[in-house]
Image (cartoon, rainbow, N blue to C red; front, side, top):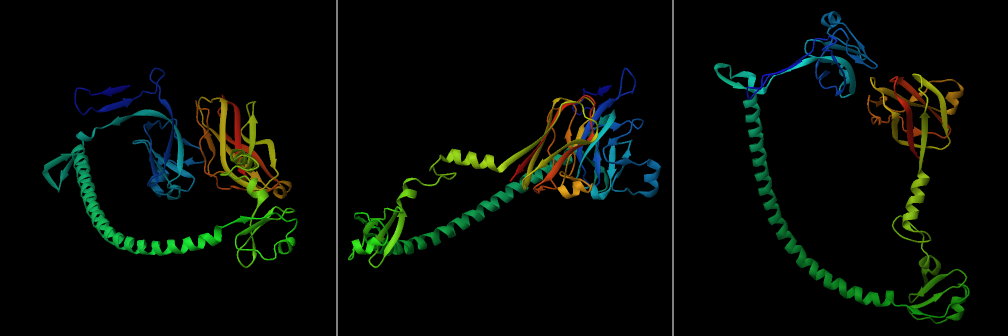
Amino acid sequence: MTISYLPYNDPLLITFRAGTAHDPYVERTESWTVANTVIPLHEIPSETHKVKISGYTEIRKEIFDRTRQLNEQEFYVNYQNGVVHFHSSREGETIVAQYKGRGVIQYPAERIYAHIGGNPDVVKNLQQIIEEALHKVTEAHMAIGLVNEAIMRCNAASDDAHHAADQANLARDDAEQAAREARDAASLTKKIYKAPVRTKQQLTTAYPKPETGWTVMVQNTGDIYRYDGANWIFIENWVSSALPHASDTVDGLMSKEDFTKFHNEQELRVITFLFNKPPQSGPQNQIIRFPLQGTIIKVHSYCSRTGLTLPTEIMIEKIDQSDLLNANTWTEVTSFPILIPPNQQLGSAAAIISPDVKAEDFFRINFIQLDPDIRGITVQIEIRI
């Protein structure tokens, strides 16, 4: 049941449910980031049905009131205001909470008042305080902008003066450099092509008195030599110049597009787990061996038919060959399970905490939680080798 006092410009919104068959509580699944050791739920949760958080245990109010402490895997719910408390080590972590919502009361900012300076006769509402603060912030930003603009103009004037002096010196240096380069270019770039010789050893016999710039190709290698006034200097190879090697920016024996496609496809491998039949929760029997060394860069999950009530939680695990033979513990690849929320086909992203893959490592899937209606789950692991 939702009550709205709409005749006013600042309506009070009240949503309250009786929890009966005609007015049931609403099933809610929310994702929050822990800030200052708490998360505020969107609605007041039903204390009868409790708040459920995968991997955590809720403690009772009387225990929390007595100790005022929580362990790392515990949480406490204030069922009066919908605030959930966590251990300080969970700060910044993402939490998925499930509960039945009883409703919520939303107060407009214009209906919340504060005494200013301890004077009971000077009263402002929260909306006025917010608007005044925003106005002051805007004025401060404008003032900072004017100061920065003045500093930029001063710096620009100083730079212009230095630039003018530098340009005068550069013009003088450029003129001198141009004269030197013109003289050197004639002797360094001049090429006078002569008849080719069979081998490099025949250069000195075929041309006993060469002149600067003479250029000769050696037929058995394709190497081209130029006489610089003192020695025969190798300058290029006819074969590699005519048919260069391909790269991701230059066409050669293959196009640059084919070169990029070939190398990218060679560097990426994908492991795919497919579960057509409804699996059971827990580690799955299917394991896959990866024969190469590499690095996990992404993981994906999706389904062909969505679940209806619960988020499906998927953990990817790996183990090397020796640990597998010795029945040792599997290593989790991501920091948290991948989630496929109800009524969604695509799974969430997850931070990879164990990206290194050794040759002969094995992989498996561990279903932490399964929606009974989900079907056709696919999990893919992208590995760069």
